[in-house]
Length: 246
Ligand code: HEC
Image 1 (cartoon, rainbow, N blue to C red):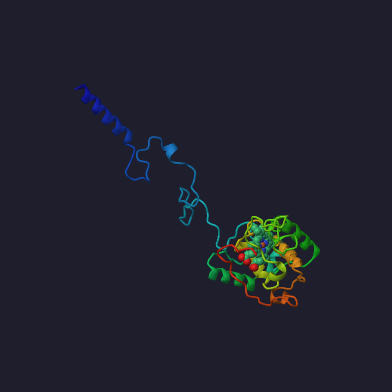
Image 2: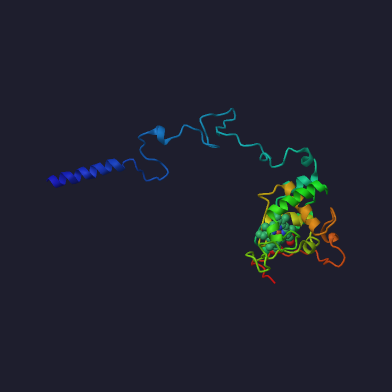
């Protein structure tokens, strides 16, 4: 008899304990402390108790159509009034591993993007500084693809298994927009720099690498090739695997 009483008491206690659990996982069941269960703060973009004259109770107004993030296009007049500059900001290309799609994006950038910066010592000097920070380890001080990650001091192979092309050959074959695409989004075994260099910095570093390639000022594409260089302007999509050294 005593055992039965204990059993009944145990069942009653657990029923009481679980009575707040419902079958619907989205509702809290019986609420003992509503001020802890329900926040009084308004949820972003959720209906609220505040209703405007249009009957709209959403807690936060949505930005008007066409709104752009702060800083997306700089307030700088020089940039806002320069079509080529704006294009570098607005053209939306992206990196893809699908070689056909990649080639499409690369060609689009080559056709649409023009270098907005003036060729002067200031831009080249800024580009040189950025190059020494971000690119020199792979591309080398001379831009010949023999950076210290590729070739060690004693001449043996470095840890980086892909060999970057010699700028003298490669940059003469492609357009400024193609270079901008590769520097922004990466190509093959090279990562993109769109996240760490802003548009101006990317064009500055391009001025510098073109100077390493011996390309004169604003010359671009196959027209930038010098006598005896390859005139083949066709770009190759990045290969899936690392290039073998040799
Ligand atoms: C980790 C090594 C590495 C670093 C760092 C690196 N690159 Fe490269 N880069 C490569 C490799 C490898 C390729 C060849 C990619 C291919 O063709 O598949 C390449 C190719 C290029 C090309 C030719 C792109 C084309 O369209 O054919 C340009 C231009 C270039 N790099 C510029 C830069 C600049 C500018 C920086 C610094 C902001 C930089 N790279 C940093 C490894 C690197």
